[in-house]
Image (cartoon, rainbow, N blue to C red):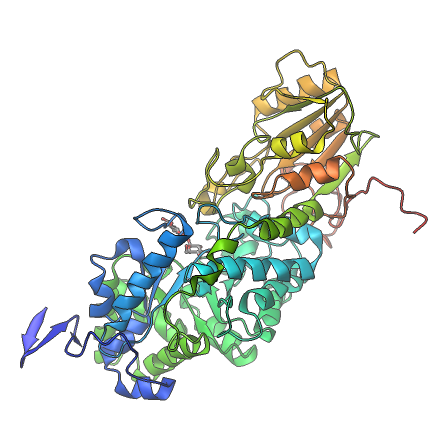
Length: 594
Ligand code: BGC
Ligand code: BGC
């Protein structure tokens, strides 16, 4: 902080006129013409709200954006109101800056507003890909936007348009599936999220991520290298972005990964020539979390390379002051042009004007009561029903709801956290009653007739006297790199549970996982097998189908491999010999007369 000629300057920005709480400029051109270089750089800076030294840094540096990353709840608590209060607090700090340019707050609402307690948690994208239903996915975008908007947030880092080509990748569940057709189809989510007009109630700016090839890395290594020709990059990985741009997606986030050894965050050809010039993307590019730091060279080089390559706003997220100083020095040294800065700031301001933030910077809380409402959860339950894929059924399904006893077993049967997976309340997700919902077991208990005994035998080591067994097994929650797996197989204890229950009675195995797993041996010894993906908070959708209220309609969004040796395996490969092909999915009821 320094004092010159009576006015206070922080971070190079004059603090003289603060206090009015009204934007001091009224169009992109008007703002830009009044802005100092430091104010422009502030707009290009996104800090993690948890990294702020003090809230007044938002004012002092005229920050353009803040984010709450995975698990980045307000320090005061994790209710929707806590979030709205937090965002409004930061907004007030932004409006107190010299020009009072509103802040744009961003969040990862990747399967519902999933960091916030009590929200509606939808199936992860892999399950939505199985539905093949873009209208449903558009509706999910709408409901998610409504829940995000009610907490004062206008920007979502979703959808992931990653095309997962290798299920060893820990982010496979963020993908709609292994073909570009699925991700392209599901860009309908963007229409639901952004609505007809960005300034309308419940409209939230979407982000197509991660540009590009994140799902194509060798051996499915997170943040790895996508070693493909330009033709393959274009056909498989770029194609869904073309569709997203056609739908006017507001922002694009580059991928941590590389294309043939070159990191995307520094790739001017892909970020500018292809994304802008060829595809016509008109929104702004937000870098991924500390991703520019991974570029080769020192920090000054990271900053100039990424900005010159075409990144408009940098998700710093911690050392925002260092970023600001470094970019200022690079501009002053002539390494980054003022034209490039103006271009970036113009795009960011345009988004803020389009969202109506200059007119209505504070939260509209009128939708708070609808967060996690019955009608929102109904959409999620329907999505669960449609996402299930029936891989095998030797006359066990549908289960009659009036048997004497049903045995439910498995570690994933009664666990909202596990059935929701990563990016739920915390970054990696967690086990237990992490949020509000219905577990798969609770759904089964509600679905059976009065008088039917539902015995929950977690490990399947009790008396096992039931008429039918439902064994719910799968993966424990994970996100990003921690989810990378070389064997994608079930744990020995879970295999034993399956074996015990299925040797004692007819049984169905329900797999709760973010990807296909290696089950070739097991599936022979079970009567029915259902891929349930990561269904989210509405576990009742599973009982709806198991008991025949509705039939299975889901089909595989990914090829189901026989063994890890087969990986990567994708539809269209030569010598394609999977356990179940892409698009496979049985039904229970004979529909041959339809
Ligand atoms: C992820 C992004 C996410 C960002 C902010 C990164 O680690 O790759 O998908 O939007 O964090 O949480
Ligand atoms: C954040 C995530 C982010 C990750 C990147 C975590 O601490 O919560 O949002 O993606 O760091 O490493």
